[in-house]
Length: 142
Image (tube, rainbow, N blue to C red; front, side):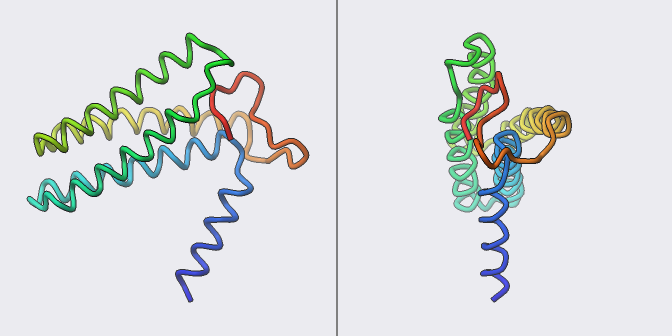
C-alpha cells in the first residue's frame, strides 16, 4: 500500500513539474544512483555498483536526449560536453571498478544540481497548464 502511494505521488510530481523541475529531478536521480554505486564500490560489491552505474548512465542519457539544439547551440554544446564527460567517467568507473571516478561524477552532478536549483528558484515551480512549454531560451525538452 505504501509503495502505491509513493508511486502515485511520484507520478503526480512528474506530470505537474515544469521543465526545469524535471531537469532537477533527473540530476537528483543521477546523483542518487552514483552515490549508490560509490557505496557499493567501496564495499567491493561490484555487481551492485555496476547496476547503479548503469542506472546513472541511463539517467544521463535521458538528460542528453532532452537537449534542444535549436534553442542555443553554443550553450547546448557546453551542456552536452558536461554530460558526455559524466557518461564517460561512469563508463570508466564501471570498467576499471574505480570509485574515484564516481566521486568526480558526483562532484560534477552536484554543481549541475546547484545550478538547476537556482534556475527553479528564479523561474518558480508553477506550471503553465495551458501550454506546458519550457521557458523562453530553455535548452531542455519537457
